[in-house]
Image 1 (tube, rainbow over the protein chains, first blue to last red):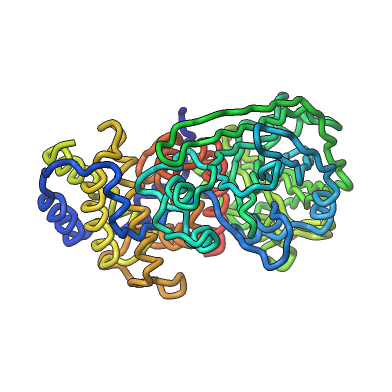
Image 2 (cartoon, rainbow over the protein chains, first blue to last red):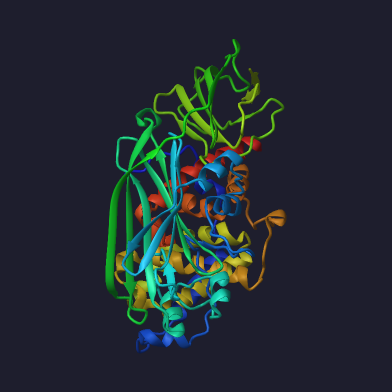
Length: 356
Length: 152
């Protein structure tokens, strides 16, 4: 897939590799011996404490409640959603789907025209114990489940999920639970992540960016729910179940809109601020700005390193959607930014200019 | 995988491995230890490399695990508040500090993609996350990096 260009040379963010590091690496490389290959199983006897960068996090709550977007966003990114958004998510009509031996329950779901999010909770239908994962490489021999889950299960954190399931005598299920956007409203970018609650139930989070001009009052979606039963010893898929269901979800209404009066003079860095408007949803406020770069400025969005701030120049509380910059029509620049605000600010600051 | 191939590939990827380790550990001594340990671990687990063409993502994943192991053992842990000066300053210290201020979930995919030239698929394979998640995190990372640079 072709990658878009970036404005920075990230290589410049790193010091030159020290000679000592290179020499240490090569000393280790030259020191290895080509002995008889280790049997795949022998690594289990090696006490290797390895932490893996997980695509998932585990969060244990003191109270019995399922986890969701609030926990994920606050613990991972320090983002605190609006109360209105929380209420909307809490009001999600709960729907359960039977997928093989598991019940997947839609716990949270909403769309506001620019993002669509869902959270499915997975557990066995009969309430029996099991291990649930959302990973692609559950049996990677260098992988591990991480400290929090290992503590909860009472196993060594160096074990893979497969090994833990085998040791504990539990079935192992790989889950994927998506709310796919099937219309032209899909902007083509999405993310998935998982959480485990203190009982080990898996919460599968899915967020999709929407093309707001293509989204109407309702949004066609497809729930794609997949469960695989894995053999803990070999990693082979023992059985696989899929449920797909077309549905339609309501899109939150825009509550209010405000256009800020553009300044006559240019901003601090010479940009002509053509238009700034703010749209209020229960999920927060979206700021959409159109600017024109000054003559002579190269097409380089490093130069547009700005964000909408409050009138005093302080950062606004980060919203679910990070700021997005579009310089494809340079020198015209389109900027979108979300803030976790319950109301439209009377005044804002953009590149040193106060607008109201 | 034979030893010649192993040595040759590590030689070729040494710079990348240092930058990945530095992204997590931010200390040259810790990077040195992690790179050395990762090389030895990789050789032990060489059977897990299914195809030679995946060496880069495979060794990167092993190194990332090793770096986090270093964190977990509390060895040469460096907090964000006390980032030590590296033995040689990066060419763009402002960019470096801004990158280091990003959450780890965003910092790593961004540097693997835009510093090391990995494709989204390779980043997904290295970090064991879906490609769509890679795309979303990089998008988020770029926004966060802009914000950090703006705050400088």
